[in-house]
Image 1: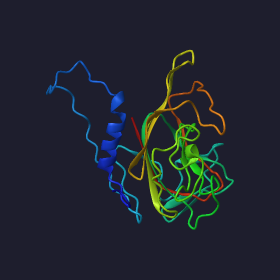
Image 2: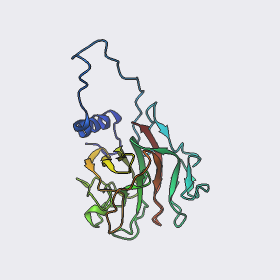
Image 3: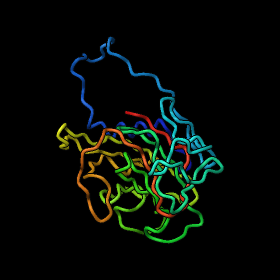
Length: 254
């Protein structure tokens, strides 16, 4: 059972199992063909602990080095206003959401967060934030440890669409991990949807979203339809007026 540490190689194996239904055997190659190109070499990351973040895989893009928010901006493009200290950064309430300067589409995303301790509030007013793929599709961040709310709004939910399969939340103040595999939507030249977005999520090493098909962007009490977008857009973190902590955020383009 994974408690304080997560194991990168186990995480990757679970990702493979969760997304295998989308892979197809390439008919160009015979079984065990020694001329078939081999995969590139990647140095795996190291495990995080409660005391210190782990190291990202060698081909990952680090989005926070523990020192500054130089890879992030406010939604309007102005410098990031969230607070950085002691190797993490903290949501500054009422400053607005952060967006990455760079854009990402299909990706593997790793995020570590810690809920405010001692906890304050209840339901949705308890450590609320969110991770937005392409700035549009939210994985809910919330203190769901021994705290009740609606199922498709608790920690690990694809907000308003899919409750998590399990509640794998740790107590407030402890570092938690989201490992996300995201395949974005595709549109034809006329803007018609040709492939919906899909998400797989592990929360603290537990599979909680199993290659779910998104109905469209995230909405509150509504389910917006897809509209044509580029294949890559900035990632975003939500300011929901709670001082949630973040650290060790990295992304791998797929």
